[in-house]
Length: 553
Image (spheres, rainbow, N blue to C red):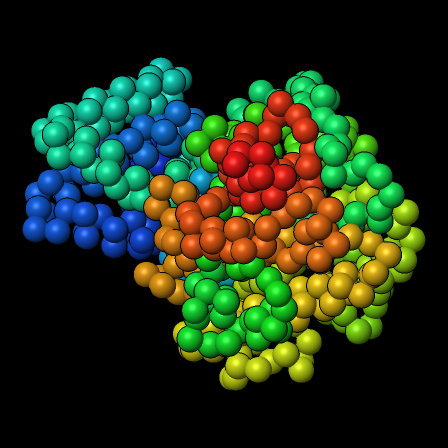
């Protein structure tokens, strides 16, 4: 008797592999360890170099811990969906970990949650899709083709609990065998467990959820309600316009003003600017650095909870009676301008600056020219740039600014050489140089205003050094490329005169170690805003007011 094709398929389907839930969890754990953890293996081999027995014990402990977590979900109707989630998540996170050196911790998950489709789409490349398809989606589909072996109710309920207890005990036993060494590894090499996929990202997601849930009903605490303008504002005078430029992903090492081998900042070099060459960021990603740099908290004090529950320096300036606005060409103000007037340029229809669907920072200029002509009151304007945001550096500048060639013109870094990636990035810095210089020229021409500009980037960028790309590394392990940022100050003569600021005195601080901690207090000091919130020790302008220096003499 000849079987029909349908019968043949049914017969084959009936003979498909059969596993118990725990067996399926074990096979999946082995697959995840072998396929999704290349960086974990590489870092571990380096940490335990010459001590392979200790490394084997460490791997056994981590494997038992992973199996313990999976055993919690090793019940017939839960095991496949959970393991499929593990496989796909592991495929996603391992791509960014292995290809770009990006650690998916709580702060990185926060970045993902507050990003936009426009920004994130550049990270969905052909390489990413292929990797996730082959190492995540296909194994997950194969998982659903496997039959779950029937067991008695007692075994179904008892075995996962026994496995959980046993694997946790084994994990503890392996660690106790060389506790002194392992404790040192956990303490000094946090990057090892941070690279373990996909369970480190799971922990990060739990921490992020806890952080958000703790602030759902937060009440914003006012600060600086005592703020008022000082004597510099008395008498007949011109309105003041201060522009604060929040840069994006500009690292100090590639700024020509800081001695970089390439002249990436020729236009700023031709202006009378003060360049601060030793400035550290508060974080390594916008979601942390941006709110932190405008807050009154230092990097050591700052937390997401403190940031969202307190007003910031822009609110203090508003309390003092200044008109404050936020203009955005990035992923938003992160809540900083919630109580202020704001304007988004991100989705502007403009053929010259927004042809790719994202706008280059030149989009600010025409609006700024019109805005400056209407100012009749003391004003602070924040420009939040898209700057040098990667991985599509080539979209951040016009074609005529492609000075360093050949430049990488794809988000797939593996298709570019290290020199091409650096060329594209340096072109973004050169364009930022031009935008800042043009803004300074505009301010310098406004004889009816006393004007100033201060520029500082939110964080830096890795361009392949030590296998790291982009930004967002945990601060404890972030290279200086991600934490050292450029900061530039320009003031008109009228501004210096009104506020009694000594440019030569400020220039003496050009090489002093500064950080985002200084911005809150320095903006208040620069603009002569009196409030108990200002800490003179963190105000770089405090020793450079001529009136104060005369009084001290």
